[in-house]
Amino acid sequence: MSDTNLLRFRSVCESALAQLEARRQEVNDLNVFPVADGDTGDNMALTLRAVIDELDRLAGDGERTIDEIGREEIVDSVARAALLGARGNSGVILSQLIRGAAEELVSRPGELVDPVLVGAAMARAADRAYASVRDPAEGTILTVVREMAHRVASDLAHLPTPRLSPETDSETQDEAIAEVLERAVEAGQQSVLRSPELLSVLREAGVVDAGGYGLTVIFAGIVGALRGDAPPELEHHAPARVSHPQHESSTYRYCVNFAVTGQELAPKPFIEALEEVGDSVLVVGLSTTLKVHVHTDDPAAATAVFSSAGEISRLDVADMREQIEERGARLGRPDNGAPGRAATTGAVAVTSGSGMRVLFEGLGVHAVDGGPTLNPSTYDVLAAVHEVPAEAVVVLPNSANVRMAAEHAAELSDKDVRVVPTRSPQAGLAAAVALDPGRDPRDNAEAMTRAVEAMRSGAVARAARDDTDGRFRAGEAVGFVGEEIVAWGEPEATLRAVLGELATDAELLTCIAGEDPPLDREHVIALAPDGIEVECKQGDQPAWWWLLAAE
Image (tube, rainbow, N blue to C red):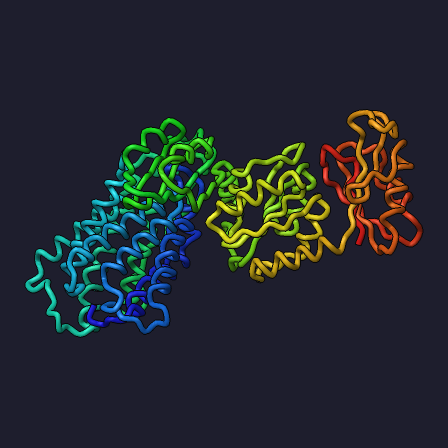
């Protein structure tokens, strides 16, 4: 570029991301291939955001020039950032488009970026993207980028002077590139409209390809930035008629993405092993860094394929069945589920019982089912973290047994994840009340920890076995304050004793009823000491008759 400051390049990328963000949900709602998990817009946006973050890192104080940094370092760094930031099929393929274009740019050091170089970069990007997919499907983003590149090449062949002089001023340079890319956007729109003719899944769902459409949105943003004006008009597309099309990945649950860093890495040897545990396999990258994408029921088996190849990081696991259900519910709403402003920090809570899930979700917390014994896997927690529409997440394990899995998930996730070590569901609820989605994750974690420290917990459960000290027999009630047994015997007397212990210096007692407790709500309220307000909720937890909290 004639302007050697990185800020000009960044402004083009930022405009592309802004246009994609404006239509992000629309792109999500078109997504039915290869899986109708409704996250194509999200995944492409994450890839572009990674590029912008890397440009900011390279620019430092904003004064370093392209010559000072070096074009080779810039394109290599941007390509690697896109690769590591990519998620899902669409994000990984977009990262390969960026990598292909970057490879062409770095192969021509010192050459002015003009329509000819842009055309060559687009052609190489298309080749790189096709090469990254084992069985390329036509009617997807691959077709769209190929036909856009072909349009650029055809237009350049008819230009009398396609090359620009090295002395060309920046305004002329920008307009020349914008003119070529605008026609590429037109070709892209035509290709997107033809996509249902080429891919039966799209035709059956009544949609165009989400990734291809997202690509035209990105290029429209680039054209707008180059001209300093509004981007070219793009047609809007209605969401899918169906949310459960039958296709290749309908039997697999998890979308798994991770990076592998090592030495002398090559994608090909790992692809066959991954196809034994799943499908929709993508393994792309450099000799020192690979990005892996696979749909599978066993995330651990997928990561194990690379156990001797290098270090695994940026692990992201998405539950596609849950994504598909949420997408179907969203598209069924009259407002089409249009999202509000994204939260800075979200939260995940491990729960057991349908009522408990409702309680946490009512506080804006994503609930992950830990089963009757509150024992989810690391990958269950990771999948839940992925589902939260925020790039920072606080995890509430709600059991000492879950804390290790939660902390392991925090280490593996590519999000900023904090674990507040809640040891009970009622402690988790107290923490959830303190969540402020607009606050950063560190401050949220601190506030939620203080909320837990300010409450006391208790519980009453049916004894599963005889006490070794002879205090109670299997089937009798056992009452706890904290983790200490304070009462036992008949349910009524035991619950009264626990309520009495918790009521000291308390103003409010919360009682969460489990499955089939032996006393009804009115009876429970009557057992509380005089002057103490009791708030009753339904948790349906299987292991405890009542979970109690004092504030």
